[in-house]
Each structure stands twice: as C-alpha cells, then as structure tokens.
Image (cartoon, helix red, strand yellow):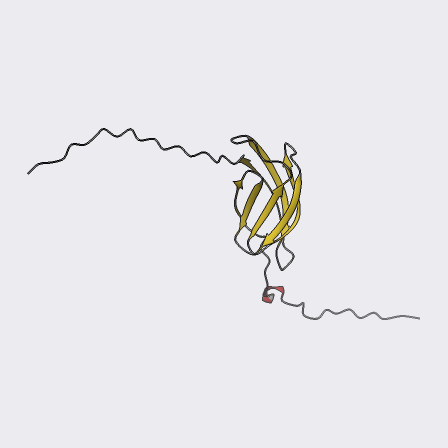
Length: 124
C-alpha cells in the first residue's frame, strides 16, 4: 500500500505582457470660475465618484465633461475665502484617484494698477 504522488508545475503566464492602462488619472488643478461654479482638470477623461466641499455650501450638480469636471454649488462662494475640496474620480479603465485641494472663492472684481511715471515724448 504505497501511494505515489507526482507534482509538477508548468510555466507561469508572463504578466509583463499585459497591455493596458494601469495609471490613475492625474489631477491638474481646480478653481472657481464663477461665484457658484468650480472646474477641476485632469490629464485624461474621468468620471466623478464623490465630492465634498468644506465649509459646506451645498453641491447641486456634477458634470463630467471629458477631462474636466464642473461642480455647481447650492450657494455662491465668498470671494477670496478658502475652501477645501475633496473628491474621488475614475478613468475608463477603472483606475481611481482620491484628492484634496484648497481653493478660493471666485472674485469677480478686477483691479488695474498703473504706477508707471509719465513719459515725455522724445524730440529728435
């Protein structure tokens, strides 16, 4: 009553030959483009997963537009005030990115400062 056992192993698949997107989306920047609108830019098309803004001013709508996400807020941001934006996005291959960034409330005012001395015409 002797049994025999044979063990062997075949070649393992070479995983280095996998061709596909393994890189998470890259965050490029975010900013307020209107009193109640924030745009977030990425290097590739993404889909939104979740977003949170602090202090909480409410989030009405999220639009995924290629490599840009547009957040429409329930209340306008206070010009120049600091906000903290946290979010999660994923690309077409399912790679995810979680990020947190600070941004400032939209300031519609523009200011032109001209402190150059008057110049006199040059006579030749």
